[in-house]
Each structure stands twice: as structure tokens, then as C-alpha cells.
Image (cartoon, rainbow, N blue to C red; front, side, top):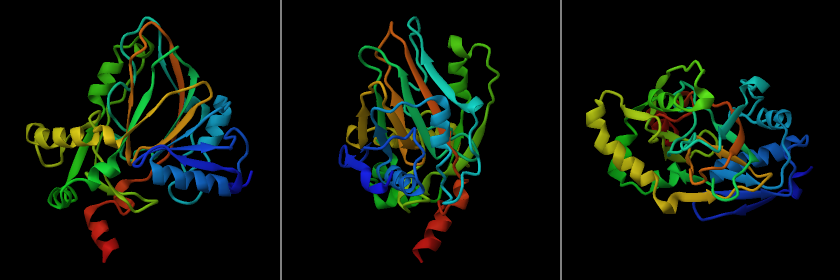
Length: 287
């Protein structure tokens, strides 16, 4: 399939696009993969409709992408595919709070790809919010201050909460934390964005949790404003592909008594301090 066949339709002014006329279960040529990569990087999150993705085909699609411009150096295997499920009797869901995936890892994932498998009769949307637009709207003084700071991301609270869900009762959780720049420059577009999220960011490096709380709460509230958001209404065959370096997401939990099952794969990222994302690197790039 050539790049001329693929269509890209913006959903709103700040975040989101729908990609049409492409079968992501097929063997796409490199130019189409490059165009999808560029569209995700520019719009933050993209949606595909009417797809039929087996686990094997979703894995093959995910492993075509890379932030380095070369082959994916950390391809996923079938055993790493995550099934995200909420059963009829459950009241709590997975992902029911604003977060970006795996930011607690020393090398956060770049992309997440989520395919709808079982949907409730109504509800179960996912909301996405752009960290890049949130950064753009901060005052120059606060932008400059944040560019000198690093934030600590920790999965302890989320893992502890997930362990209360029946599907994770026998899991062997790993508690992980990492520090990243509070402002990053995107490796593909060069655009700056905040890199904090309510789910995993606990405090600023060198600051206590108590000292960090007022500024973090301000940033979380700014990032989650409605004008920075797009909301996806899932249909059978819908697939979302989002950029964890610049986008938060929230799985809306409004379908009690019904089942929802989603199939997720990830796209490997790179260490953010090596990607021109630190304040020092930003200064060097601008020189």
C-alpha cells in the first residue's frame, strides 16, 4: 500500500487525528510506517477504525516502529502483549486516572497501541490530553524553571491498587522508579512538552514530596484541562496509537455490570537524557 492511499483527518485543534484507508494488519511498506510515525508524533494520538488485529498481527505492527530511525532494538514478543480487562462484577478498572504508560521505567515506552476486543454497550471511552500544549501555555518564567528540574516517577501506588483486582491477585509485581527531565524535547519533532503525570510522578528530584505537591498539583490540573483533550468513543475494530512522551490518557469507568477487554502492545522508547530532552541539550540545540 502506498502513502498516497492513506488519509489523515485532524480531530481537533490541539490533539488527535484519524487515519483512514489503511489496513494495519497487512504488511505495510516502509513509507507508510514512516507516515504513521510522523502523524503520531505530530498529533499525539491517532485512531484507526474497522481493523481486524490478531495478537500476532498487532505485535508485527508494533514492532515496525522505532524512535531511532532504524530497526526496533527492543521488539515485543507475544508473551508481552497485555490484555486489559474489566469483568462485569468489578467496580474498579485499570487506567482509571490520568497517566502516561511506563514513565516509571528508566527508558519509558514511546508508543502504546490499544485494540478493542470486547466493549460495553455504552461508555468505556478513553480520553487523551496533550502535554505539549499544556507546556506551551505556561508562563516563560515557569517554563524556564521547569527546564532545570527533574521529576521522579514511581509505580508503587498504582501497582498496589492493581493488586486488589482479581486478575492481578497472583501477580508478582515489580516496584520501579526513575527520574526524568520535567520538560523534554520530542526526539522526532523537537517540540517541548511537560513530562509529568498524576499516575506516576511523585516529586521533583532534590525536593521532598511535601515541597513538590503544590507545583505538581498545579501542573496536573493544567495538563488535564478540557481544551487539551480528545475523547475516543470505541467501536469494534477501533485501534488507538498514542505517544507517551507527549500525551496522557484516562480510561473512563462508566460501564459497571459489563465487560471490556482491550489488547495492548508497546513501542520501545529511548533514554530521555540521550534524546536532546534535557535543559542542557535544549540549550545546545538552540545555539
